[in-house]
Amino acid sequence: MSAWLQLTRIALLPTLLWDGIAGAFLSGSWQESSFGFALLCGALIYHGGMVLNDVADASLDREHRPNRPLVRGAISRPLALAVGLLMQFAALCLAWFSFHPEGWKLVAFLVMLVLVYDFGGPLIRKSAGPVLLALARATSLFLPAAAAWGFRESLSSELLCWTAFSYAIYFLFLSRLATLEEQGAAGMRALQYLVAAGMVPFGLVHLSGGLWVGIAWLLWAAMLLPAGFRDRHIFWSPERVQAAVRQSLSLAPWILGMALLLSETPWLAALAPAVSLLVTTLARRFAPE
Image (cartoon, rainbow, N blue to C red; front, top):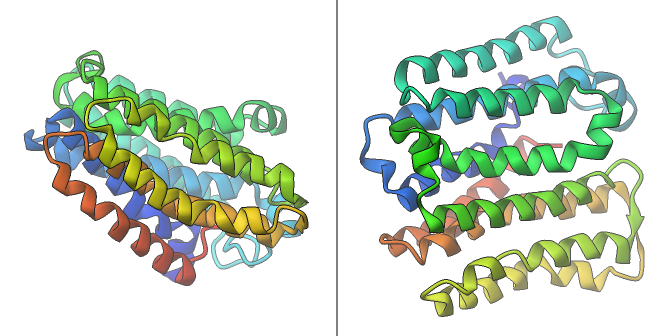
């Protein structure tokens, strides 16, 4: 069982569920009966995509990540492929029967992004991989609203759209940093991605009530950036880059917390640090790399 939990990168489940919860409260769709189905659908797509990612990267992992379940033989590659594809198919079926008639199209779009990223080949992964990952993670915020009312209606929330845009930019820079995990990088090169990611919440500060977002931003940046500045003049080994990526992933829930400070349920923002802590704790047991 532990091999499957590692394969699906279960340590990232809390932040994925937080995406759906935050998206639902930002759009007002949390009261709809389809809310739970949207969370389940998002989990199936995301964790199924993680399984397929290991299937596609098995040869690369033999060199760089020998402890991954497929490489060490804990799970067979054909079985992992079947399970990953089945999870994507289950998400499509769930959306077809439980979502708004137009909502399943967003799920199909997310599944397409997953398959293109995982099986598109090295050229697509290298050139468009970060964009695909950022787009998929940001689009997942719209799942609850799309499940209830359809995708076009979900775009009517300005706050949700700004949050999704900020989230996409954050994961874009984080994904660019993650591309350095295999060979390492000069400290200043890696730091530039962290600094760029750290500027993302500025897109929310301009909205009404931005003072509290600004305070949360400063607290968040104080956790995200200092270690990178300290190591800016040294070469970052692959392990050092992985540590920076893992920390940044664990801090991603704060961005949604900042957005919730501007919503009708600002109290929900208090859960963001708890989600970050839970992700960090799980990552020690089930390493997402």
